[in-house]
Image: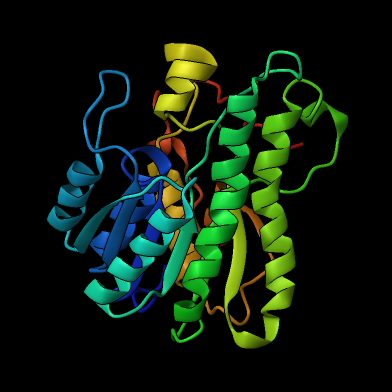
Length: 277
């Protein structure tokens, strides 16, 4: 990637960034010297969920960036508004928003509780929409503004709904925001794109909810998403909008030919992610 493509001095707001993919995206921006906002709920470490907003902020500062840790539950509008206001007060504006935070519940209709339904739609669908709306007045003032949703391409096949329709709808909402907002703001210079991993990523969700250590071993490290996000966010916002990217596709376009360094266990066959053909 050309050296002039950098996030140095930019303010990058990342939801769900205390661990996993969100933290990898934040760390990659911090290595450029960006101002990084670590926006998540976790303030106390948990045995199965390592990392807090404070430890992630410390890692970002050690990597070369400036960091602001903001405890935020995306289900509550007043917390979103407060997080955006604190960011602008601290760094003077917002250049990039990454909507990464999501709730996962791979259950059928009869097994999905109303509490879980509301949680998934409150965080994935409503939370990402409201965070975007609150950031937009500041993004519209930025030089190269980007919104990046960590969400899949809209693949309307029954197999991606039949076993977990409530989750699929909540996650696809984030992709619908990309589809609609990229057209809505096309003439105003704000980029809206989606990024999704080609393979499973070694996160706490994969370990604890999807398949344990065997699936972790068949996954790539979160850094692959961090590098792919960086490539997108350093492209020109007026020309790079309305796309549904995969991490592998983005990095291949950037000239990457060897993905083995991203593998948790090189040589192990990789597990493809949901929603992709």
